[in-house]
Length: 551
Image (cartoon, rainbow, N blue to C red):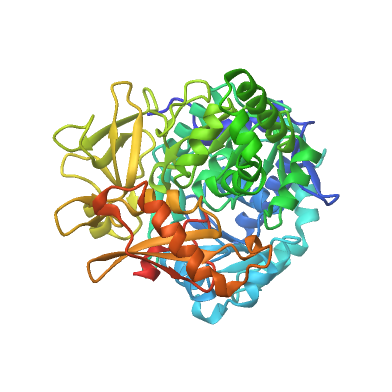
């Protein structure tokens, strides 16, 4: 059991960092110090108490990332209630199902998300409050939520007659063994499962991150990944809030243009991202440069090669603000070619591994120790790993883990909980891989997406897609098996059609790509066909393609 109490981390941080900036909405005047966050949290505690919320009851949160989203999150967990963060990308029916399945009594919600919700289908919900101003949007008869919301100023004066000070910060005395967050995964079929994360699971992630010397008091952080997802929440919200760093919420779609401006403005000290961001930068900014004949020739000369690599590294570093100690990549597998190139030029990045069921971290390496192809070493003294294969060093098997970060189970779903744990208590990740003698994990793919060829060979479609996605005119791809043949579905990069090329040329261009990628593949991995897909593939909130839709 982690010694640091999860809720105490924030009681201590809010007192010690009282005057420092805590969270801001980028591009707006909205800005809160830690002291102001603590005061807003106190107001929401009074509001929840007035609505009759008790420790351990569920309070849901759904809406676009914002400073008030963060304040609502901190208020719920420090009150001792169980937070149910819901991705705003879920449709209204799924949101309503989650609210009912989770037994949520209270809801903090964006006005946009509330428009699609039918409160008549939420018999347990007592009240809903707007994330724009914490005003009451709905109350069940007799709850008194609206009156409580409108009378909060008076309640604060009564509770803190001398004004709210850092000495007034006192939060729930709730043990680390208790469930703190009910995190509904994005899922792939049907309704998603509610992952029961305890204070210990969350404290395991936060206290580990605090030992890495990556984030400090007064640092600037840029949050552009959805906070309702465990990865972003742990390292873009919970860790900065614990160390006294300033979180800048992007609050917009993270297009390359918007992101690069935000990086230049904020100059973050640490960058938490997903592979897609670096892959796009590589394909649009770096690949055209190193593909020029003159540059390709120069790269063959060791001395000149090092100068070119340094120039590219410096340019990429400057584009990301120039001040970061490290770029941490997670949430999905990164393209192999991109990974190897960035490592070759000495760019400060690393790739970690985790899942919602581990809140989320399983393995990590500092960028200096990172080995291309791996996703870091298992967290020492916190997690254990094993590979379900006769030879874990060489033979691929399912990655199984246990330790401080592993969830309690799936809420009200004993069957799913039983199936995800082995009889001796290890969590089945569903990922396939190997592990080396230094306890570094190497992922080959998902067990659900692995294709078994007619001659018994294991085919990992993600590895083929990684190679295909770097070829010209390919934006993204999904490799599937159809009638015993491997077929690549490709969404073309229409912007690359220049110099007189049109959509009519795409079939011939893709046939060239098919022959090119097959040169890089084993005989049993050969693509029989590339089929053009008319639109972007549907994705989860963490930007992974929903593969099940395309089989």
